[in-house]
Image (cartoon, rainbow, N blue to C red):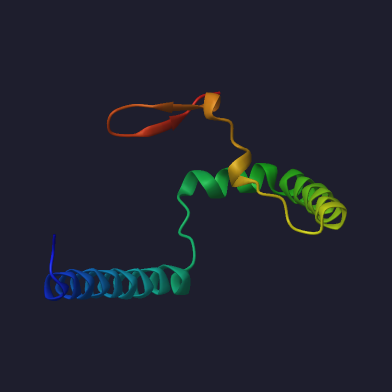
Length: 98
């Protein structure tokens, strides 16, 4: 059984590591958010070809999301709705099956 000083040392190490991780995430995410999303050339080609269609789809989806939010009293959990059967796990990565 550990004594109290070992527990305190373990807890302080845990808290210090969590604090440094949160600090690093804050710094790096702030950098990314400030610069915005960087798209490649292919995105801009597709956007020029499909921009109007995407805008119409966005309006439709926004309307459906607003209806769901009103019906259920909270926004839908879109991320959680991905089915496990659609996700293929491998040793080093996770890919989505179509």
